Amino acid sequence: MRETRGFKLYRGVVLVVLGLFVLVPLYVIVTSSLKPLKDVQGAFTWWPSNLTIDPFVDMWKTVPLARYFVNSTIVSVSATVFSVVLAILAAFAVSRFKFHGRTVFTTTVLSTQMFPGVLFLLPLFLIFVNINNSFGLQLVGTRLGLIITYLTFSLPFSIWMLAGYFESIPRELDEAAMVDGCGPMGALVRVVLPAARPGVIAVAIYSFMTAWGEVLFASVMTTEANRTLSVGLRQYSTQTNIYWNQIMAAALVVSVPVVIGFLLAQRHFVAGVTAGAVK
Amino acid sequence: MSVATQEATPAAATPAKTKNKRGPEHRPGLNRWLPYLLLAPAVLAELLIHIVPMLVGIWMSFVKLTKFYIANWSAAPSAGLDNYKVALDFNNAVGQALLKSFGVTVVFSLITVALSWVLGMAAAVALQPSFRGRSLLRTLFLVPYALPAYAGILTWNFMLQRDTGAVNHVLSQLHLSDGGTFWLIGGNALVSLITVATWKLWTFAFLTLMAGLQSIPHDLYEAASVDGAGNLRQWRNITLPSLRPVNLVLVLVLFLWTFSDFNTPYVLFGTAQPPAGDLITFHIYNASFLTWNFGTGAAMSVLLLIFLMIVTGIYLLVTGRRSRRA
Image (cartoon, rainbow over all chains, first blue to last red; front, side):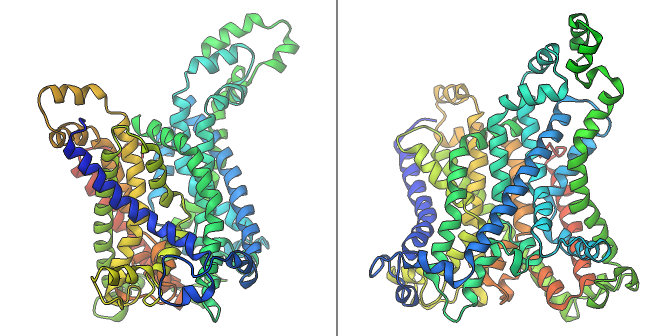
């Protein structure tokens, strides 16, 4: 590709248009979160009439945001840990062993990722209700139910991505480790995992993002006790006033950790997607 | 692995030590079962959350599962094909609403996928040669993807408010409208949905295409330049064919995601679903949880699944490839 004048013009136009498309909403979140209430109740302004950090203080009182935060953190961290461990084990099996049902496993697991969530939602809700009735194990309205559900959401993609990563690690390395007396599991822990660290980090961030941002199942499986941020933020609009400045402040606060984590790991993430796609 | 076995055996000093040091590869029984053991937790989780519920869902679509039977589902009477008849009877209200929602979803998906792909491709190509500020822009473009879906959609919800939103403000400043447009109710709801969904989705197309562009060898472009091919011809003759495998998977994934998008209408409209923005997943959700008639909801879900499988099957046949590993 040569950088002709035509190309530079094209690049300029594309980047300005898309830059604005992406930036304007981000700008609106940040500035609105610093506005007093009267600013967001009147006509839109680009700049706050006076800068205030009150929305960041008040947002914790309008709705029990801290509780939603704790719920989301516990659910997302647990789902991530389980999902990553399960994905590592499965990806190791797929990439290092030949066994019956290998293809069936990979295609079935990957195809579950493609099916619409609403298809599982009603039956899963019903199964959870009936597990509760039969065994007394409460899964609707508890964090446990959400953790079990979310860990499977990121699992297919994680297995696929990690298997791609593992396959790029020369087998001679784990064979050498086994010569030194490690079993296959020893080779996994001591050789494969350290070499695949970027992939594991990328998969962990992906799993966390999936759980942190999930809305559909959270809207059905949560009650006030285990409500997560994704549905908790809606509580602001059920108040008599709609505190848009607080909503924007809360949206900003719940986004920042995830966005920073993703952007720090984006290199690994792109590498992981490429490793999978190239095969 | 057999090499390792042979070499490790003479190295072992005493049998007792061997037992400790050597892994399970020396026990053929365990070794044969090891991959299954490794897969078992993932398989169990997938069975519990995906496979079994899917089968239960199919069963549910054949019974009268109203709210009286939710806690005692084994007592639910069989409905035969009634749930499907209700969903597909386009002369009654339920069937008509489903058909309309299906039509809205088709339009929504086609436009959103096309827009997302075009924008993603445009940006990926623009950022192909390196220049100052390239990595900064790439990072910026990934923010909508990294943002939790509901946070981005809530922001758009605020921007699309009639009296206090940024969109009407900008449009009236540019003299493109009087600034009094309703975006979240009425016919404009579909335009809003497409805009918000594209805002998030195009960055995924961008991310994937960018990764695909990196694997195209540089020499190809150089050779084409020597032959006097302009940038547009290079894009058509080199970039597009090289990205074909990436594109095949990308377009399918974008379509499947968009077609079953729930987050965008749910966060954008809440419980007030405007008919013009009544996407199918949102429609099924409301049909099930507002009326607590799970049987009809399940039948609609199965119909949606069948439709998506047919589309995927035709797509894979037409594009002439077996579904790769994605």
